[in-house]
Image (tube, rainbow, N blue to C red; front, side, top):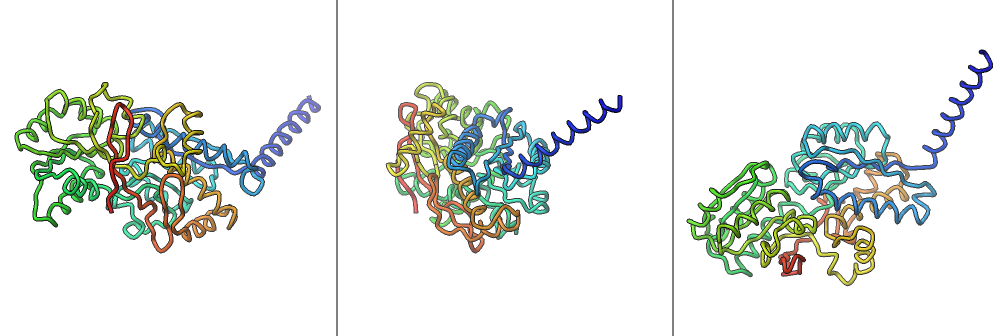
Length: 373
């Protein structure tokens, strides 16, 4: 019996030693994302971009000779789930965390993000997440802020599409409210008001009453702001109700994963906002080709931006080491970093990406329609 206990104890010690050695030879990158639930489709490209970056780094020897282990925790597409998933990732001692792109979810995590001090990257676009508003030095945005994107959408409607009567259809959320405010401010600067301003709840699967009021207001352009499932509903019902106004969708409406969900032809001619179009950029042709081959889908800005985020983490660790404070400090020196999906500045309270482009859906794919300064 004593010998058996000794053998068991020796086995446990060997296993513990092996785990410790593995931990010393690897770096853990955490990811908090919706892999199930309503937002899983929209966040799938973020996982793709992150996985591609990790694979590229590991193929080149990792970071400082250490391989990267990606650990993903599911938010379940729920706010409470996002908080719990972030806490579960923290228990894995990550060097950095690639976080959900949903602004409301990130806002609910803010206390923990700030307290823990781990470099956390997000594609959440809310203007409320700007470093100068929240003072959270370890939060890094890879998207272009919504202080810029809805303004660009409104300017495109006015200056390129010749709009005279712009209607707003947006989610009753922090994200949607931010779009409404920015569009209204842009119109007000030109002495205009929205022809109509309608809202819906995130779970709504019928926006017929809102669209009929917009139709009665004789809008010539409708700007829709919401999450991917909201765009699927809006696009289908705009066509069903025979609205003839031109349509501009917020970023989630022109993701390749969202476009695939539209009924054939339903979104043809509709416009949308993006940070970039890596799939159409000659400078990113090699990256885009590898992405298509690996994931069998067209690359988009969100996948590219999360790819860029991982690469910036790797550069920071190579420069300053893996200590969380050192990583954050190194990232806060990044200025005009040209990645695959955007150009980023985090120095001097920089807010991440700066690019805004407009695309048009044609035959189930997106084409560049213009950029707005």
